[in-house]
Amino acid sequence: MRAAWDLVLVVCVRHILARVVTAGALLGVAVAAWLPSAPLFAAPKDMEVAQTTAALPAAPPKPAIIEARFGIHPDKTRFVLELSSAVAFRVTTASHPDRVIVDLPDLSWSGRKAPMPGQGLVRQYSITATAPGASRLLLETKGPVQVIESLMLPEKDGHQPRLVLDLRRAAPSAATRSPAPTPPPVATRPVLAIPENKPDPAPARVVPAALPTAPPAPPTSRGPEKPLIVIDPGHGGEDPGAIGIGGVYEKNITLAMARALRQQLEASKRYRVMLTRDKDVFIRLRERVGIARDAGADLFISLHADSITSGSVHGLSIYTLSDKASDHEAESLAAKENRSDAIAGLDLSGESDLVASILIDLAQHDTMNHSKRFAKGVLENVRTEVSLLSNKPQRQAGFAVLTAPDVPSALIEMGYLSNAIDVNKLTSPLHRERLARGVARAVDSYFKWLGGPRKP
Figure 1 (cartoon, one colour):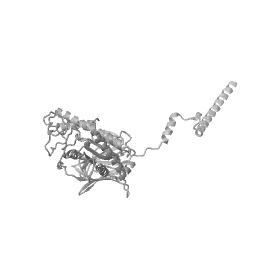
Figure 2 (cartoon, rainbow, N blue to C red):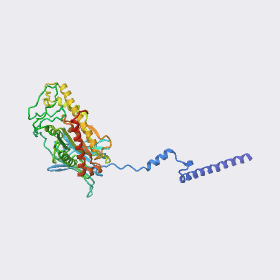
Figure 3 (cartoon, rainbow, N blue to C red):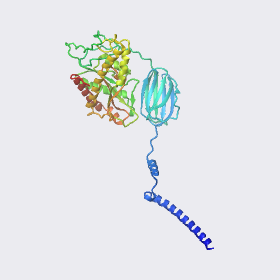
Figure 4 (cartoon, one colour):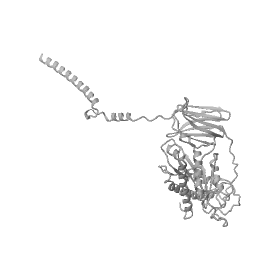
């Protein structure tokens, strides 16, 4: 009987102890809530990470496309892209096939990725991601078109911000410009030069391809001619270039800067200066190169101001032709039927493609070395006047305006219209004057170098 009572007592004690343990556990949880930093009640490591991550601010939502629509008018086709917020954009046109290209930041869109049918002058259009943080709107047109208006309308009257493009039919361009007279040879130009396949008005001096020689000296009665500098304000006419903060057009910035640089160079009385355009007109890229070559330019300076999705990037950079683009250009020139003036002073018409390509390539790289020398001088002379791009301001690329094998050429990106600091500077006449002074000093330095030993 006593053994039975002992068993009952043991069971009761165990039950009471279980209740006490449960109560203790609840008390521990309560204390842990009040004292989260106490080691005894510290949360597991993975829980800490989760709590920390949750406390970070959420990334801002991407701008979203709300609607795309067309408006058909007797004289134009309007395309409207309604967005959740205004964004920077860049408009360009291209041919073969004819199309309008709009580069945009990364956009959120629930529409179809496949091309969608267009209306009016537009055959079809598509919106795709082209790179991390970037999108592209592609309008395939039913023939050549002009972009007569491109703007970002702000939110107004119940409408969200809208990207508006007005397109007008354009006739296929025909090269009707007659070549300008070629001035006498200039001693400071590179020995090997490659003009377009356009015969000089004056009889050319022809020598065997295997014996390249220096160009003849200018007539002694006139004395040496001043070097000719051709300044190319990027974009123009129906091509506005980049459209920056506040609706600033790249074509207007480049023209204003070209005039400021011309003034500085002409004031020195050491140069002749020509602009590829001195008003708001459209000139194709190859025509810009042709203008410089037909005039016998000694230096070609193209001016631009870019716009990208990141608003924090700012500063000046300068480009010369890349080796890859140079090789392609040499092959293209060597493949042409009329090669009698592919290199100034040399007749390549009787040479094989291989020999012609080698000689043209040598000329191209000689000019590229001069271009790089000038680009280096620009950075050295403008860094005291303007801020430079922090990441490698001297660069190389295959820009079409840099492909003249006979004219040292450089493209100056003066800044970014997507950055408020650069926009404020580039719209300031005082800043443009300071930048023009720096570039003019670089021109002086370059031609001084040409008078001495020539080494890349």
